[in-house]
Length: 356
Ligand code: NAD
Image (tube, rainbow, N blue to C red; front, side):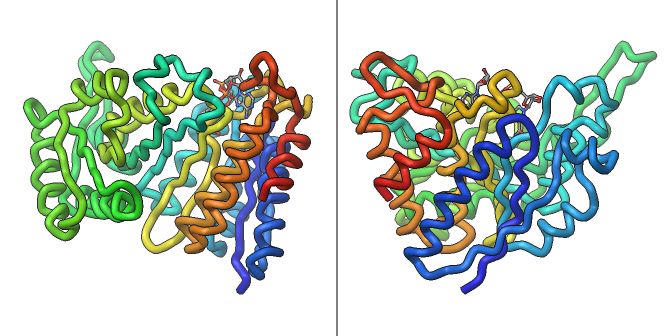
């Protein structure tokens, strides 16, 4: 079986961490007798430098002709003064998600037991660990609704929040399907006491829930959800929410794990196609030093195996190998603590490969 992966390393530490994820995928390919065909393409500031645009048409075409995309990170001070449409994030990442129809953003907030000390929460709140999946609607809501403009000589501003039934339905199915394969609980987050879009959201999610009788659905107001995440995060399995609430809550959930360099993400569209990337950015402050943590990108590759290629067992093996490497005390500088072995990007991947 040949699976085509568009590889978009991007800027800063992007190339360093993506190359390590490919080493892990190569090992999986040997074990599971699949063939990954990598097609590398330019994106972000490096694409702008080479072609004059952060998302060149060839890159988009390679993505369209692939089964999944592995994305590093884009951006850096060198490109910060460009007009917004040419800046790496606004000019490449957002249009790429839109062009590929990636409407579902999945961000697991998984706390590896060996890293419990990095969480800002006390041990008794964390209990045996944390495993939350935030499913965020990514292409609708207030970030995209029109009109979005200044009025009254710039002294009044308008953003518009719009959701349609089909938009809510399709993201709700993603969340319920994910919950079915996990602990069978969905917390749908809205602001139905105030917003009309939230009332529609709640109606549609309740209807979709009827297709998943074995999954328990709870509706939570967003302000309460923000509080409960700190008070008792272990009550959550899958959190389903709209674009802006998801943007905020997924960062809050991520912080509970204490380390940005560990967090993967998936953006999914129709079918099995998806884009997989670490949650962190291009870390220009440490680029080129060989010290970046490759684990978020390696875990993103694991999500690719699970969600795009139906290789859940291989994904789990990668996650277990990461867990084992951490338990054995291997740490990159960002997650290092007293008594652990400090390693660079390549050595961290070597350790994961040893346990894989
Ligand atoms: P950042 O995530 O790049 O870095 C924040 C801090 O975390 C830095 O100190 C960095 O060294 C550290 N860090 C991040 N990833 C790490 C890793 N894998 N290993 C070790 N340490 C790591 O965020 P920032 O500094 O706000 O942004 C830098 C650039 O990245 C900006 O141009 C920003 O626009 C861009 N950015 C891109 C994306 C993306 O491509 N998806 C996301 C966020 C930010």
